[in-house]
Amino acid sequence: MSYPGAFVAEQPNKPAVVMARTGDTISYMELEQRSCRFAQMMWDAGLRPGDHVAIFADNHIRYFEAYWAAIRSGLYFTTVNRYLTAEEAAYIVNDCGAKVLVVSEAVREVAIEMLPLISDCPVRLMFETDVDGYANYETAVEGYEQVPLDDEPRGSLMLYSSGTTGKPKGIKRPIDGSKIGDPDLIGSALVGGIFGMNQDSIYLSPAPLYHAAPLGFTTGTHSVGGTVVVMEKFDPKEALQAIEQHRVTHSQWVPTMFSRMLKLQREERESWDLSSHRIAIHAAAPCPVEVKKQMMDWWGPILHEYYAGTELNGFCYVGPDDWLAHPGTVGRPLIGTLHICDEDGIELPTGESGLIYFEREEQTFEYHEAPEQTQSSRHPDNPFWTTLGDVGRLDEEGFLYLTDRKAFMIISGGVNIYPQEIEDCLILHPEVADVAVFGVPNEDFGEEVKAVVQAIGEIEDEASLAGRLLSYARENLAGYKVPRSIDFRPELPRLPTGKLYKRLLRDEYWGVEGGSEGGISPIAQITDS
Image (cartoon, rainbow, N blue to C red; front, side, top):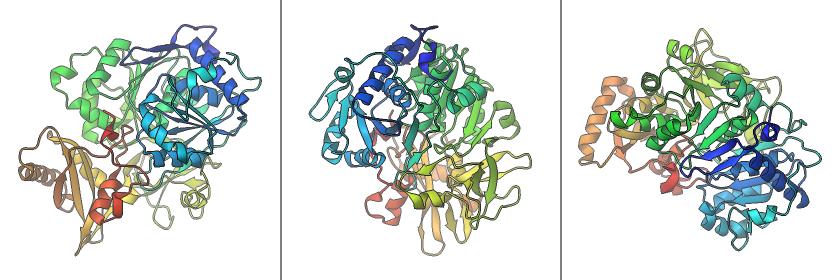
């Protein structure tokens, strides 16, 4: 099976989507009919295979009918981060060449502000309402037949990188000529094959749907006939409540969510029935070893981890048993062959850290209208080796360990320092809610280590807290890795996808005008919690 319509005859009234907070539900029959209507409307508007549809919305129940309408029409589907400014969102809509833009009430003000910037997008729709410049989505599609198009080539995603190390880039995967009913990689091989999901599975998604992994796994769940429970926003208590209430079997998280749940009071953590929960997946950012061990102690050995990018140039996976035997690993490759190389592309010996390349027999992506960025992701001598810019090492058994992003490595007095190790240490301190570590200017050494911390609760004395954290760091880190200083912020610019916009902070200390983060604004709601 590979799409929701394949299950309609067998389970027409089964919930395909349940919204965790409101309980709103859409059945498999409703999802099939609504996606057919929207597909018919877009065909009537002149869209043809290879054209682009964009969505700019919160976690809305109708997100999925827009996705499936595009995918069953041979179209590219692009999601827009709901927290972007009008200029930033318009850049993505224009860059992908969207002929249809769907927005939700949650982004109304920004969507209106975008209008003068997206004049080349002819069809603009808003869920549940209409405003000047946007037609009512439901009214626009209601007159169309609830039947499939005569031909249904499978479309694809064109998602944009989060811009944590530069301007967001459109990641364009090829449309392969398959049909909507053919098996697909995410549904058949990943969700069904690796993680064992099927029609009996209930998948909890606590993250924003505009991100690749939540979108891929929720729609992958539909591909195998399961039910998706979507959290409107992540909240640690509500996540545990949802597992109990909906008898969740599978879920996916980012490490910051683990940290927030672990810092609940013990009685809050232990008051929920989590016995239905069989597989908890995590990815998107490195998970501190001690955090994962604490989660294993709490939830049992059900944590499964993978390392991959939106580019899908490779895929590493590790189950709980292998991880416990190799703490800190992100697994061995299931897709692609790993190579660890130095700055010149020369392969390094086992155990040494370098740039991570995946080798594939064919190219799986390109950066949309960015040939230089596409070329920079390729190995200098091997065009079928590609990198996401991460640094890591391999052990003797072929397990991969991530070190950090190449862009955030600190060079102090000629010594390479990786912030991730320092962040993994400080996040375990009971007074730390979140932490970012990066290099700042030092006249003698070039760079020195700076930590910026979001504390738990009010800070009565910053100097005293900084002293406690530095003492803690000295007890657990080599001296050259201990931050020279610690600053405090009420909130760090971290998206609910787990991505930390570290460049926003780093640029302030380096005197970069505006603290630009590749077009992403430092807004208070960025944590979506």
